[in-house]
Image 1 (tube, helix red, strand yellow):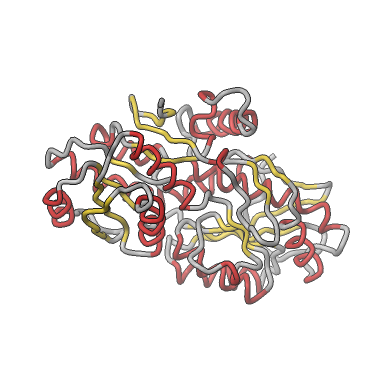
Image 2: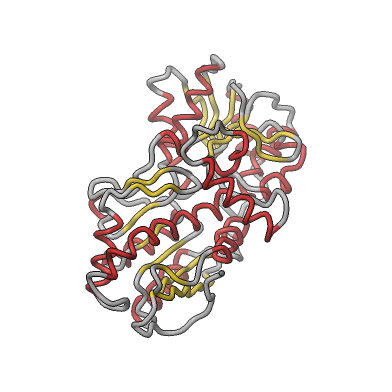
Length: 370
């Protein structure tokens, strides 16, 4: 059964999850998918009703922060979930820490570990994903790369992670360029990259905005490999990019290529089941990493809720504290993106099973064959 998607106040007889995300604005191609997954979530956990209050933030960090404060102060939510970008999720994380409300972060957070005491991050760590990219670059004897990414914290995270793995591998970044999420052209940046003559290009964008540099590269005759990140792996990226993104390579979670994984992969069954359920509602080929992040966030809460119910009633500080403690208890939770084992010292808890490399082929994301 799908959870009730509406606004209201917590009654104390149900668990209330407050969600803010942008299904409009520059992050819409991600936010729509994040939100769609809530149609697959059950309406009760451990016999206790669970309700999702989903607010629209237009992909704007200021609006996301405003929504988070409203959900905590007015709706007395037991946990927060969101958002569609690093800037927005970072703002929500600050509020979660301030109000001592668990946050299931659906995008990475640009804060140091000591400020993540109430924040549990669902997406794979950027260094893990970009490390897989560098491994593939190295296997192809690529020595130089150009970089173009968003001019915000997401672009910063991808570039930092790329350098972290590229430098020890002897791969040189010969040019670094940036563009805004709302930009419609990157001509100047692409010209500079082409002048540097890199063996490959790495894009630090996300969603449909991640396709813009690759389209420009192909229009100007660049024939080298173009790598992306896990923020671009959805159907909308291919729709916007068309033939220009054929051959694009990106790291992603197992759910995007679940059927192609070996049966021994610990995530395969859960990922295949999710993909089938999602595509039954939203159509063949509609699977995407972002809906998977929302669902994994729910699975983390589902695993933690029984212990929290023993410590307090929903809507109370005692319940929120117990929920936080249960989330970092070290319990292994098999999701669609990986096996999460979150502890006090690790609020992500993913290992190498959480990353695969995918390539756009025939209008779809497919497992990259080595």
